[in-house]
Image (cartoon, rainbow, N blue to C red; front, side):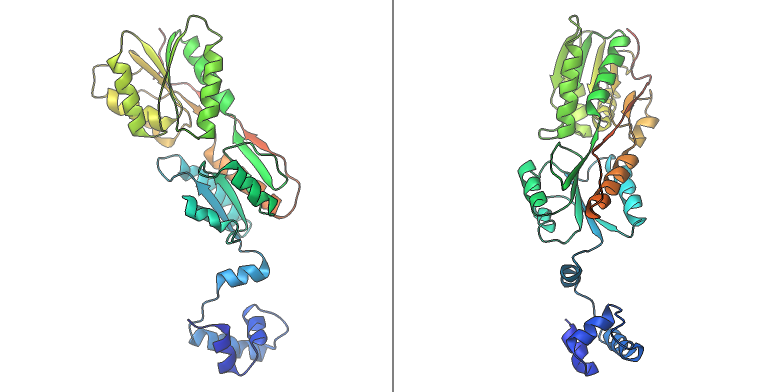
Length: 321
């Protein structure tokens, strides 16, 4: 692999002169710089990004850490992040898995946006203590180098339960999310608090995992013990779509026998028949706000924690009983 030593030797100049030329420094004459750049091109020289970033102490790259890439949820979120970063000259890399965690301490990125429960909170605090700038979307952490941009999960889950209650439902299921997910935990806690306000509600929780197969399994469970109209709050739309898939193969009708509300208002939910009732917010805005806050942290500008608010989208998937 060609290095700046090879260019210096061929050009008959010092290594520092080559470095100045490659970085556009005015310390080198135009004639010398042109000669060095021509040799670099001839030798197919590729700069060492890691070494350059150590010298400049910046990479202009932001890491976005996700638990996984599955489902329809992440597209708009990442688009919002990319839009906010590219307008400021930053690029993003999307990471998943514990091996990618080293990008932070090795300073391969300038900062991180975390929506990944494979990070422990202690690990993130340790990175923040070392000066790394982080935005968390899936937990509450108090540290000057960490900013929180969180969904209002409590309000969303409460809206969903109240909607079912207003429609007359008194047999309610909640299909939970994966263990370790902050959003799933916040939503199920809010559901429990909401149903406790009504003494006549029969309530049951079903394990889930924020994906279609989990929704299909939940629908199978409900059908197996079905005795009359039942309402279901799926803690995300992916599981609600899974319920649609399963129930389409049965005699049970959505909005008549089994009533479903989801959370996220993913694009696919808009095309369901009947239209899925769901909790809506802008994934794109959530991503953009997270990126904007991280860039402020990196620039050492003041920035407050922020909460992304939600609204209810009614749908014929929930009928009146």
